Image (cartoon, rainbow, N blue to C red; front, side, top):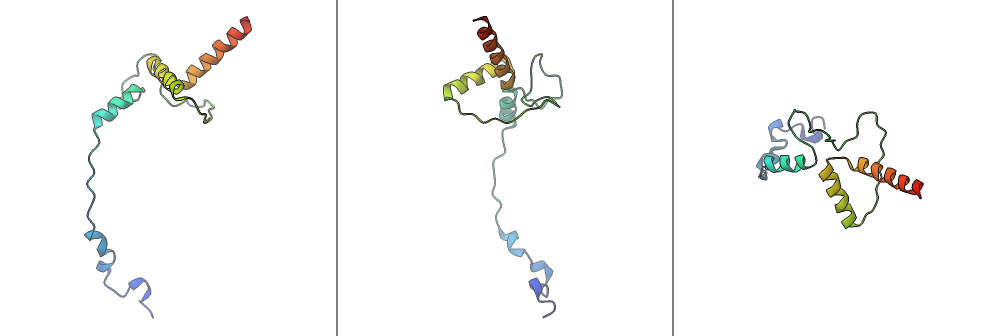
Length: 110
């Protein structure tokens, strides 16, 4: 029985030989310019230069406590918030903070 475990008594070149017969699937290359253009829309670039003034990236700064919160919004409200975020080059979190502050100020004045 010795040498029969996992076909170790056979020539090692035969192990996995069937994999070499499989054809590789050709996949089209991604369009690097289109990917870069889509990323720049939200402030992400591959360049090492400085970001435009007032531009904030999508990730929070280091050591800022954040949490993930899943909410359901109407599609038109979500689109409006995203358009506002993109036009002002700010994080959605910052927009919501400013909206909350404005709401509190109007409530305090009433």
